[in-house]
Structure formats: C-alpha cells, structure tokens
Length: 122
Image 1: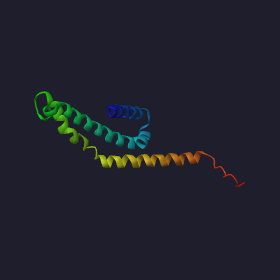
Image 2: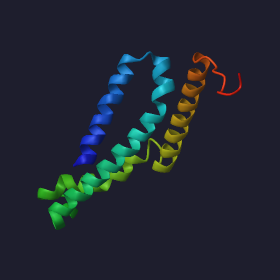
Image 3: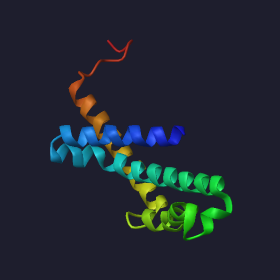
C-alpha cells in the first residue's frame, strides 16, 4: 500500500513542478526524476497486478467472468512498461541526471559563496 501512495505522491509533486517551472528549467531539473518516477510506477503496477492475481486465484487466469480485468492487467503489465525504456536504462538515466544536477548545484553554490582562507594561514 505504501508504494501506491508513494508513487501517487511523487507523481503529483512532479506534475506540480512541471506546471510551475519554465519549460527549460523543467527540462533540466525534472528529467532524472521523471525517469525514476516511471520505474517506480511500473514496479508499483506490477505489484498491484500480482497481488490482484493472488486475491483472485485461478479466476485471474480466465479471459472472462470475474477475473477478466485482473487477467488483462497481468497480461499487459510488461507491455505497458517497456515502450518508455527498460527499468535498467531508466534507472541509469535518472541517477546520472540527478548526479549531474547535484554537481551543477554545487558549482553554482561555490561561485556564490566567498572564498574563506583556512584557519592558521593568515
């Protein structure tokens, strides 16, 4: 349950940031987060489909009747995950972009802060 709530929360925060940032700022700052969000939502969807199949038992394998929707979710979960990129590629992209963003923020912060002489070197 916590992964569903966490995915929803991150999705809403990212959507809010996309709507409040300039397009250039959103492109620079949210690329990595968006990639990581896709991975998290895909894993959450797979978890939900698996748990639904567990609850429905054998009915989740039938294409008609009570388990029809669960069967379709289980069948299509991977097909929905793949078009945007595999999880490994998206994780790598997200981490690299966030790392680059952190390095840029560090450089910017160093430019703004005045250089202070170390103690003892007066």
